[in-house]
Image (tube, rainbow, N blue to C red; front, side, top):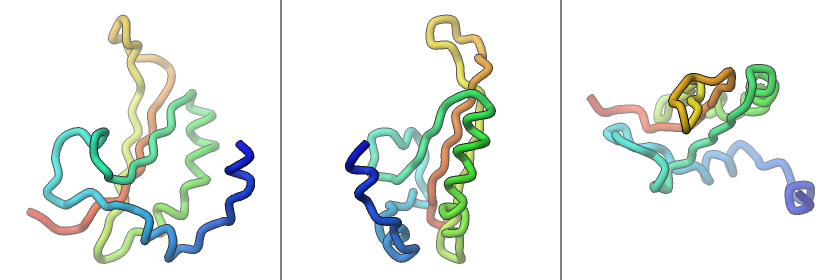
Length: 98
């Protein structure tokens, strides 16, 4: 975690330049792509606490890009049953398309 402590807070311009937006016509899994996505998993208390740290992503929304937020309950991999935990996904996508 030492490397994290040595980082400076990025400017809004640096944040916008560093993100790779999801194309407006994109479909399918985002895992193997260069698209910038944040995934957070945990219990509801953790998700609510950490989600507030990403207000700067929501503030990036403008006429050319939109912020996608997806919150869903996680499943147990072995049983397929829903757990009490959640996954929060944040990404930035191009506006446009059909």
